[in-house]
Length: 58
Image (tube, rainbow, N blue to C red):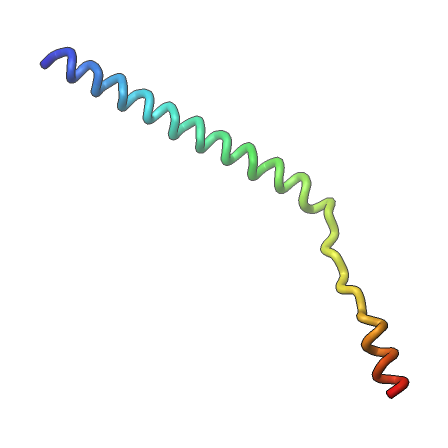
C-alpha cells in the first residue's frame, strides 16, 4: 500500500513537471513568434493581369 501511494505521488509530481514544462515552452514559443511575425509583412494580392487583358480585348 505504501509503495503504491509513493508511486502515485511520484507520477503526480512528474505530470505536474511536464505540465509546467509545456506551459513554459508554449510561452517561449509565443514570445518568439511575436518577435518574428511583426517583421514579416502580409503579402499583397497579385492582380491577375491575364484576366484583365482578356476583358479589355474581348
